[in-house]
Image (tube, rainbow over all chains, first blue to last red; front, side, top):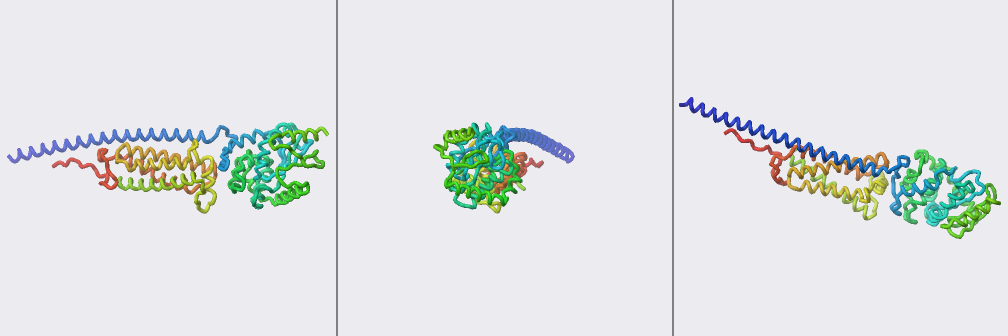
Length: 279
Length: 161
């Protein structure tokens, strides 16, 4: 009797044990399926994320590997830097530069362009009449343009020295005109304080082909102060007080003040160049 | 660390992320300079760089949307689909943050403390959210509020009584 009871208990226990084992196996199998499902879901998410990041990288790297994407934008003007760089490259590429002189050294006529990089009227000229003058007279070898510094619009003399020296430092690598033109193209609102160290550095980084390390060390060049003083003295001697102002003459000869009718229409400039080139 | 603790840590980091992204979104639209540490202009430089928006949408706003979605998925019932949503969103945020860090270090060569903070938050959140998702729930997908019982209690096995 007792052994029967013992046998029944063992059978019951065995049944319970088998049930428990079956349940555990089922749970393990279900967990395994769930784990595989989660890994698949996660794999899908990883793939989507990778595709999205690659797309963003391609989209934000720009089409050209030659031109490094400029690292800043001019929020004051909302003009994309890439657009300005492209315009300046199209205007200047292929034209010889030496210091802050644009054009061939053998050009028969020289135009001295007195400007302040923060001067909005200079911007008007730089984006108005100047491209045509460069295209028709500088590119053809008739004219060379020397950029001269004259403080007018910039309120702080220290800022003026700093910004003009930044352009002069680019000129030491014969990239001065890229820097000057980019400055004017991306110019912010007058007296808004947009000319920060980062702005100047951003322009340098956007300047095609500029060696940034050399530009940075060149900015401390003591001769720039003398150059700024000489330009100001020359403007004073010629009776120039505002910017932009121009002196024109045969290369190596005396210059006289160029009177213009419009800063957007290149005809005054082109006529003066043609007249001097023929003489 | 229990699943409940992990969830709480994730919620706290997501709330910090929402705060951070809200501040950056605010200064973006208000046009004011970010309060930066000793690096001075680096933050402003990065925040106004051409990489500060994506297809016209400020990165700060994208971050805010991302953190809000992550927080929403964490506050939702503790179900498989929401755990997956958290993991997927954190994964996307982490990858985007890695891309932005790459731009800071290699393209802009300037570091923004706020961006680094966000990257740190997402780096903390990534392993936690992945562990939480891969581990699965033991409650059969039922809701388990944060203040409720821990979700990692082992399921009661039938005892051989």
